Image (cartoon, rainbow, N blue to C red; front, top):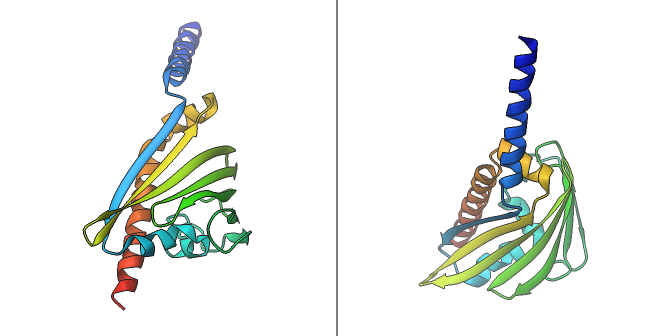
Length: 179
């Protein structure tokens, strides 16, 4: 009986390992929101890391996280590091490219809870008197990251977080334009 249980357990583990191995290594998510504000106003929310606290979905998860800034106050070369609770972990964001009012590209390096790197982009397109903001996240996942993403429904979790961040940004920008 014990031998059968062990064989079933080994079979389940083997199946899990095969399923993880078959997951794509490239991780890509894209979310879009439309904000009733000019491109320049929305672009400024992303291009200046000092403004992220007002809309970033991670800021609310640990209001006591230690945040530091390096480099210029905004634009290319701006760096933000953070260290917080288990929900936000620790890492560094570096703004690597921007095209005023059109694009912001950021390298994100996570050191805790699990090491990893990704590229995040925000694209801004006019839609009448509004701005469509598209937030993309791309990364290459190793076997462990693929397993964690599968077990924790990583794409769903990150999609929800990005949607919340865009909704927060919409609220901040549209609220500021009414005052």
